[in-house]
Amino acid sequence: MISAASGQSSGSGLYIYLLMALIFVGFYFFAIRPQQKRRRETESMQRAAGPGDEIVTVGGLYGTIVEIDDETALLEIAPDVHARYARAAIGKVVNRAEHEELEAEEEVDDEPVDELDEVDETAEEHTPADDAVSEPDKKSR
Figure: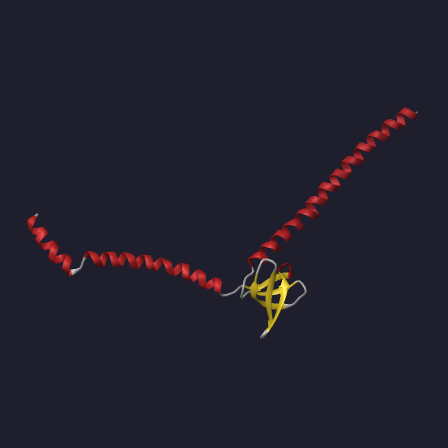
């Protein structure tokens, strides 16, 4: 009887270890991974914040970034009222600065400049001085 009882307990011990491993895997996929993803998104948002952006700190303070460096951000919380916060205290970007939109427009404006270069090349080909020089060349051929 003693040997039969010890055989059953070793089998149930294996199930306990499997159950604990299953719980750990489930905890990893339902708790740890989503938290890591949220942390990465928050860090990338904090890195992307720049001067002119309207933000909300983790404490609920609304402000506009005036100056930012690796560790801190200088916020304008009211006209001529500035406060320095840790960069990690940026909770959410409410409005992006307009300078990013202007940069996007400048990139679009670069394309017509290329077209103007092509127009200049065609204008150089058909100048009156070139026509005068090219007429004798046409007669000699």
